[in-house]
Picture 1 (cartoon, rainbow over the protein chains, first blue to last red):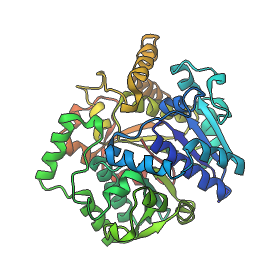
Picture 2: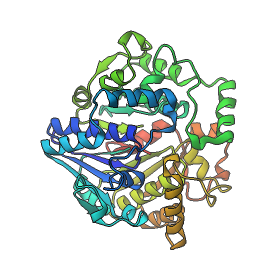
Picture 3: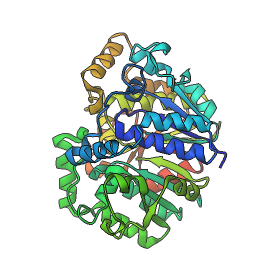
Length: 137
Length: 137
Length: 137
């Protein structure tokens, strides 16, 4: 159970990011080191300017899915950013922005929410992942 | 080849679920244990009420992709649910619903198609996966 | 670092394919064998007829994402197909079309861009992957 979990997070909709948060928190609770590598629209969602906004859902969610997600939020479900903060408090969760996506979106490190620990390239991501699992979301 | 394949199935469109079914059936045929963990819109697609419905395609499929999928269905391609049933007959395929997604969608275990073997949390999913591959779809 | 990286490429939008190209090129630069297995809309994007076309972006990109991607292309970013060609020049990158998706899209091997090395079934994909990582994109 000490094998790392390495999530390449590409999608920035709230349903996918909630899935990311649950997978990360669950792995952290089991003592697995967890590395997140934020690309494209996921990175955009981790900016200070946008992290607390509505990021929409996958198109397939439809009106029924939208209503279900809204009802759960009203019932007090923690947003994904909060679940990730809690997972980081457990320890062993590192969140890095992909340097190429930083360029794409014209972002500086100071634009990112403090949840993000730094910026790295894909080579560093692979080297940190080592023999651990790589999962693309 | 006895390493398990553990699919976190998030998407519920028919093209993604067909890909899931083919990956699961291929792995089962090679003797790999296969675990499916159904979340969000994929779980919705495995309910008794909806499993035989049209679940749409990824938006990028477009009209041309829609026509190709429909033509293959008319030519007798097995729907993904049938391919999964056949894979379960080979053995070694276990399908679990994510307990958090059950809550989100207000589902009871009796709402699920018999293809689904049970309901579990993310911790159980990780423990069953062990050192096997984790793939998110 | 000699464990293989095996990407099941399902999505055919330019943002996802750019992510694929970067992950493949980075792994190749580290000496990892890389296998791509092209399905559905990704396979469609690797046809001679379409490889140089605009393949759109994930719906969540929105107008702002579209503008960012266009600006980077204007600034001289290599298209994903070019990045993959360079990765193949490094060596160790093999690209196979999924035989079932070839049937779905009514494609012959001669319809595919020379980047694609051949056509295979899911069993061959698993056997080539061996104990290496499997990632679905």
